[in-house]
Length: 381
Image (cartoon, rainbow, N blue to C red; front, side, top):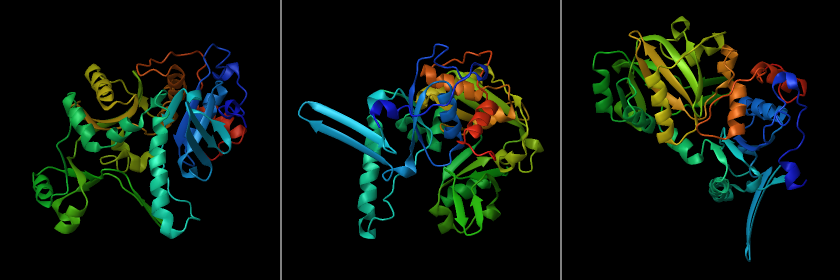
């Protein structure tokens, strides 16, 4: 397959009625590279939606490197050549306009590699994987690997949030047993959450990390407590919570009435499957300004912010996820055009993006129905 064909493949038919007539309505065709993992609903839906709008997409599925993905960089006399291939479809970095760094899977040695060589092969793959990203620096990234890495550090987020004037709960990030015990001895309710999420799977059960209330009585012996740092915070009395997604300067968010959920006083995600609908949220001017300032300082152009609005109406910053889920916001509040806005964001490739409403936006419901019809999305989704 030719390189110019690879960044294209077969695109679904577009129609005027579903907001998908991209080229016909004057949008320039974008060539989009999506870094993702297997079974990623967001990447699947957005890939299909962009195809409906006339754009060309390649999905770089991290677990497929190196067995289904190859890369070559050559230096021959005065010529530099760069070529990648995904499932034998070739493309070059110069063909890519936008990179969506949706999910990243760290490459590992294939299973057929001799166990004595696994460490060497894995190290080589990871070095090459890091180098590959630098070859697309000319493209518009959502978000860059550097910004993503910085934003994923919770202490960095909290320091930036404090610097821009966000209100934070009293917080301790520590593995020092003395400091942790002192923090929990203040006489106020506290919660614990990990620095990053984790899932344990053994035979017929799965457990995931989540926010939990913690007291001195819950703490293990000091050597165990010191073995793993964690986030300890003052428990905030909630009125409701807000999840707000930014694409450039545009945002859309929902109010989550967490008090009505089974574990809503701790973490609405524990019971999120019971949420059928939400009302849109409007950010106060100072909160909006703080979010935009944080994005600039962190170097991100897209991010999902979590806030608690306490019983005094104060907006309290919890975290920003630079690669979080966002389509659920539209599923809970269909008047918020998250999918259409994200497609526009990719089309405009602008860190100061503003959404331009259209009479026939491409909705999540329509995109999923179309994707199911052509077999790229299972109907149970």
